[in-house]
Image 1 (cartoon, helix red, strand yellow):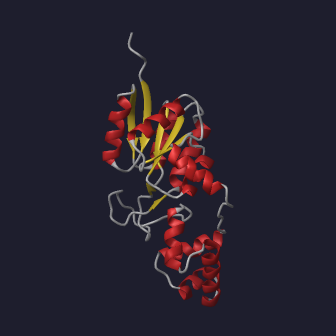
Image 2: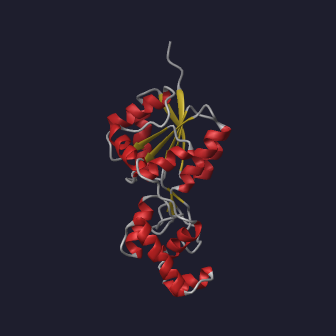
Image 3: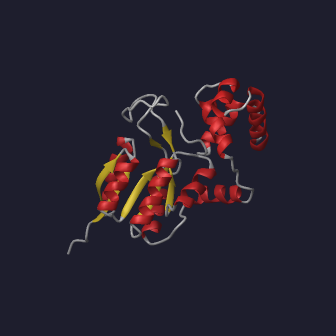
Length: 232
């Protein structure tokens, strides 16, 4: 008697990755029944048709530019963020408790993995590891394990968590988002109701907290950590 087919839904904006992942999962008796670029559309489908497995890319497009224009995910200036994926995982865990969630990511900073587990991911697979690691994580997740990573990323995360976890205030994040948009201190000050000098002082405080030397280095680091609301 044939084994009962298991189902999966993929939320990912790279068609090649989705196709390759679908082929790989099919070899392990898991059929991808639907795939979505939009986190919102993907979650809606999962809630209506709970699968065994939901695979969620950690960085997803917001389908708009920083000017607010609606665009396709292939647009060169589409915004992307991690929070959309984390929110998708939170909603899937809440609404579909029997669905296993596996996040897939090319992000390198351990903070992103910690944020993924805080959102409720059962496992996180790094694109910097190989297929063997992915399959190991997949089988462990389907077996009921949680907080599953490759051995390499596990070591990195343990070292990172041994030190105080970085936190930024809402105001600090907002300032860095304006810097990311290319604004200078006077313009940021007008947006937030501060003087240009105050903005420069706040940026210096952020640099000191992060150990960075200038605002551009800071934006790069904070983007890698997934702490900014969006990235170009």
